[in-house]
Length: 335
Image (cartoon, rainbow, N blue to C red; front, side, top):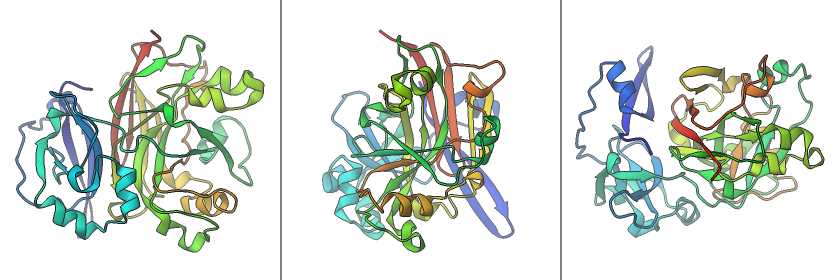
């Protein structure tokens, strides 16, 4: 976890409307942009539904569930009512109005005093879509697919927004892929595209870390091991409720390594959109509350650079999606 967690708020104005894009970043960003890191205590009930799972740094207590304040400096703990687990909360069917009423009585703690965990820690399924950005197809000289390519990752890949990624000793071709992740809000079976978005709970930032040698050359060409090594799915910082994201298909999405930009795209490049993905999958696979869908990555991955680039211990990966947040993960040696 970074030594200090602060919040950047970018105001993007279009006509009379104002949109907030809140990402959790280090204090160095604040200093470089001449923004004060002084904490302000919010006494009002949060209007923005950004759900986080966390632990207290000082006590190392069990996982808790909370909601970020509007300015991102505090977490209101709602664990007593909904337990410390986002999936349990989603299954409860609680309305946002009910959550807001609970927040008015909840205990708030400073973000800097907690460890943010992945917003979803034990989904039954992590479903991924390959070759789903036009730019990612172009950088591989591959045609636009006529139907989506699905694969999966195990839940043991999940780590938090500031946790380390292990450079496993069995691979030397570890690559980055920033992705918009969809969190399912209710049981979905044989869902029509027209109402598929009703089954979405919210969104978070994901890194689909990949061992390219195991994905492409080993294991008989099957993706599973190359995609499912421990720590290969950082998520966070929050599960942003869908009500806060006007159009998930119009979001800037970026990734940098050691401060050097590697990916810079938009979810408008998605070949198969979220509603299409849900319709196709649920014709044969039932999606459950808390299941995660990784929707694909834009151009700029290491494998297709000339020459190819791969992650090594000491590298730092920054992944950011407009209006959803930012995560930062360090690559560490396999112990």
